[in-house]
Each structure stands twice: as C-alpha cells, then as structure tokens.
Length: 268
Ligand SMILES: [Mg+2]
Image (cartoon, rainbow, N blue to C red; front, side, top):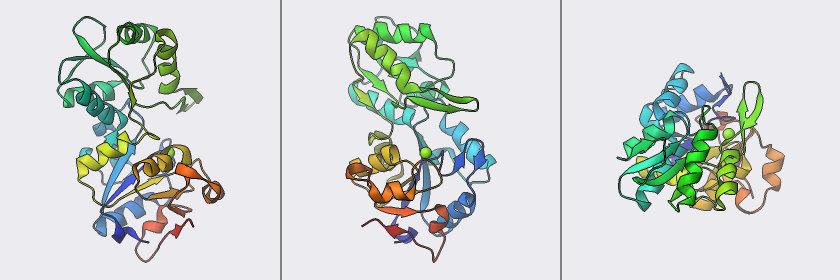
C-alpha cells in the first residue's frame, strides 16, 4: 500500500507528528512528501482547548505547512453534534478558547453561566476550568439539557507530569447529576473523524495514529483503514496482537513509510 491509494491522510498529533514541544524525527519530511504526492494532510486532535488556528500555528512553527483548515478538533466535532440537537441559542461552554470558538463557528453563543436561555452544554478541556464551571454545568445537566463532551481522555500529559484530563472533569458532572453525556466527539468515538471527512470531502481517507485504543479504534468504528505508527504509545507488537476495533489495518515503525517508493505492512 502507498499514499496514492488515499486522498486524505488523517493524522493524530501527539506521538505521531510531535511529542510535547518536539517534532517526531522524520515527520516533517514525510508530511511534505505526502503533500507533493498530491494527498491532503489533516490533523485530528482530541484536545479541545486550543483553536484550529493555534494548532496550525504550532505545526507551522515546527516547519509543517498546515493551514487552519487542515486542523479539526474535538471541539469542532462536538459543536456539530450540538447543532444536530438544537438549532441555535446560548450554549454553556465549559473549557478553553477552542470550545468557545467552535461554538461561535456553528452560530451558537457560548456563555459561562447557566440560565433559562441556555439550550445545551458543551464540556471540553481547559486549563482554567474550575469548581464554578463544573457547578454551572451540573445545574444545566440536572435541568435535562443536551450535554456533549468533546472527549473522555481521563488524563492530560503536562510538562510536570500526568494531570486530570477532560474525562475526569466530565466524571465530576456525571456523578453529581446522575447522567452520562448524550454524546462524545473525540476518539475512540468516530465523530471527530466524521467531522474531518465532512470538512475535507475525503473519499479514501486513512487514519494514522499512535494509540490502538483511541486512534485505531475510532477509524475501525468508522470503517476506514488505519495505520499504526510506533512513535508514541502503542508498540508494533501490541498492534500485531490487537483484536476487534483496536486491530490496525497497517503498521509502520514511523511516518517515513509515507515517502515515495516506501510502503507499510498490512496486518494480516
Ligand atoms: Mg497520539
């Protein structure tokens, strides 16, 4: 198999393109080559706190030619899920600027306090989310409003170690409301990839990721081919032994398999 079989490559970011602040060796050359070969590169991230502009800016600083339209976040997918439930109005936005920007893009008005005019709740990651925000979310969720979570990652890798992720904060609201979210946008749910495919018009997408339980599972659930690269969390051995929706279609040690006259191996 090679890049020529696909029109859009969907890349997970952390562990695939960069690790923390540093680019993964070979990623820049591989992505530049994919673009030269005529396929589009799109970046799909569960991190809801940053806007597409901020993520694209980070990629450009790493030397990767990405435009804002090449980035799809779990906030953008979650806002689409809310748009399918309620047409317009005020949405209680828990999370960083990425959450608010995605709601505005969809024509909603993000607000930080629950009132009778709020029509839905969107809960995503933000480093400034605190008790007051979780209390407002709990009021709205207990009132029965639609509640969409951007993602359920329980941990967040910070420079000082593992910190609580959005899933842990969603659990707080779930425990205090007795409900679970009406929908989740991020991987391993397929909504983030559906949003990326909708925005790019991809006909033959390939999902590339470093985690079997999120990236590969999301692609499998959507029924698109997947490529595991071993530069992040999951090893090739884990990929070879994976079953069910965590079993990748293809594997490679890193992104250099995307260079011309290179290829990746099928998991049989
Ligand atoms: Mg990753």
